[in-house]
Image (cartoon, rainbow, N blue to C red):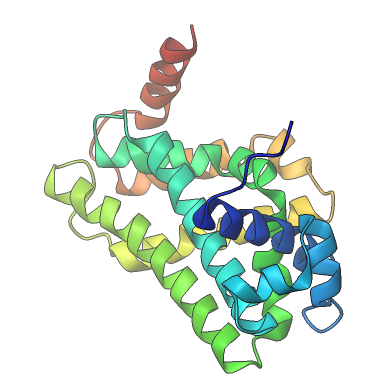
Length: 215
């Protein structure tokens, strides 16, 4: 039976996923289009049907890393009732999201070595600003709904959240899982929420809600 031909968009996503695995393991300069084609199970001309240059593909992979991350955040948060609970749930699940999408999160770190390339630098900035807008947007909504103190700076708080995500990503890539195993994220959340939250024990609340969903 002949293989079903992929749609143009499905083929593009297949190429991006295959490229993320290779670029995550080697530097941009070391990966060849021949290797990319072999990894995706296609010929080199197929790559050039979708991307004019290897750099175009690399930049698209970095954008895809952002899309994958936000898609997982949105899916996790969509059924939770308030902005603060959404933010807490995403932060708590970040480690699992990171492990489930390891090639893209490895690439988040490895691509920094190629930030001397203007287009790579630009897309990395766009990625991190998007993550900041995601978390700061939830914090602003939480302030409007009376969950978070008005004095809290949403952007600065979002950068702090992101810094911890980057730390966990780095530890994951190095095989240093002690922080996660020791409950680092929940301990950090408990301390931070004690300073910014206007609702009582939101961490306990989100744990109970998620346990109820899985029961």
